[in-house]
Length: 181
Image (cartoon, rainbow, N blue to C red):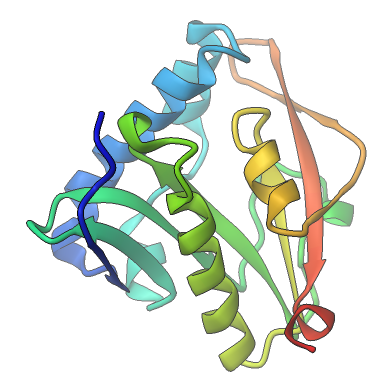
């Protein structure tokens, strides 16, 4: 697949929601299948909050499109915590901390720097909103993206799926203050 010719990063709108849900499912299914069994991926997608209209409406979710407005990647942050991770790996109670949410790249453009571009936009927006730190919970699929972006990994935690199996995820953090100096 050829490199996309030109791109734009903009804030997501409710009109993007359907395409973002499709990107989320496609990216996690296709890219995640190298790390997780398909039934576990489908169970996680069906039962845990991922992309939502609420996330878009908060105003801190971004899409990366090509010049024809085709969706290539998306990602954002919020101040809320995720319900499926342990409190000690969330941003709960931290006024200057946020959670990176729903970062996905279209599978045909994976590992071409688009995830890094979205992450830089997320971090700049979070910093301008007064955040000093971002946390996230990385799937094995996205771990390298976050490590390259300067996130410090914690120990794996097993998230119990409704099907009784577990999904190993890794909490990670990054100080935005030291990153901006």
